[in-house]
Image (cartoon, rainbow, N blue to C red; front, top):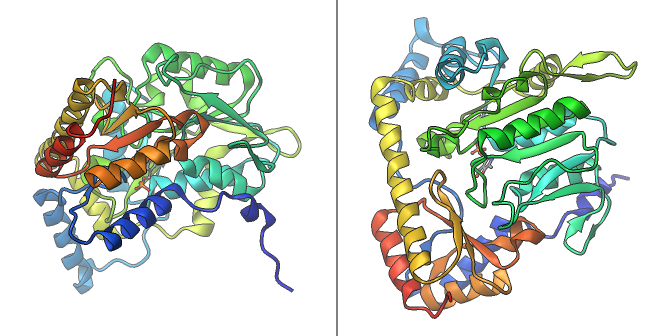
Length: 409
Ligand code: PLP
């Protein structure tokens, strides 16, 4: 008789964004005349830049001609893309990453979800609270936690990210083995300074732990003093893996392309205590379970690095950042304390009370969708996340409506 993986039974009933969608759909059904404005889920709204579409289309044409047709590509990604990534995203910023250390994938979601397969079931996992839910749920599915009690899973080490620490937790007193960090952060929009990342790298080196650094939003960083990659920190190559994505950087949420950097220096003890290369292990995992990203998609991603592609994607990012600035300004005007939105598409707002109650109120009174902070963890209670991914006119209309609600201090 087939039985389910019991760990799935520990998962909280519904994934956050599914509940947001369900509630939004129910509201729409009850009030079909009301226009809903979504400042909730972090999905881009601008179409792919022209130069990227051109490269995408040319590559599709190549697939339709005998001499240029391609079948299975290298699981790790085509070299033309991996070289661009290594040179432009890392070497240009002083991080010594080479093309062989880059693994192209279909998403940072799958990679951040799958990476935990490489580690023993009894490693101590630390993750921020609030947090991108994928890191938590995939460790629950794998069986690294106990039950969910009072808002947290037993067995995980939660790193509180609060107003008091500027949403950048310091390394814990306890020993932890695998540490998830995400900067610029989803959901708080916080960024980490060089000194803060240096303390994490020092911790990881001292405790022989591994940092899983999610930099899916690095392209939104505008403050040149902030590191974009953990590998800009000396000594990080031995103790960190980094995840990046073209989703938010270049509008690839529906096109799907991302990459993970697993440096050759990264190792962890195997069954006999001898170090095993995590680079080799990830390669083994990917070549077994993944057959690569399609050739046209990788050509489209490569076009992000062309002169025209960089200019166009930069304009999109600026557009979203300008939305974020408007959201922030309105909240400040209303007396709602908030963070993020400067090097991030997310604005994290302290609305007080119950996050879901505020979500319902915002939807009911203003027809605006936000994301309840409590869905990202206990520390998110009393907060909501506004996303800057929408058309300017809609953001302005949403802010006008929010302005007429009695919120804030
Ligand atoms: N990591 C973070 C922090 C995210 O917020 C998201 C998407 O919202 C992802 C990863 C997933 O990115 P991708 O579209 O590449 O799967």
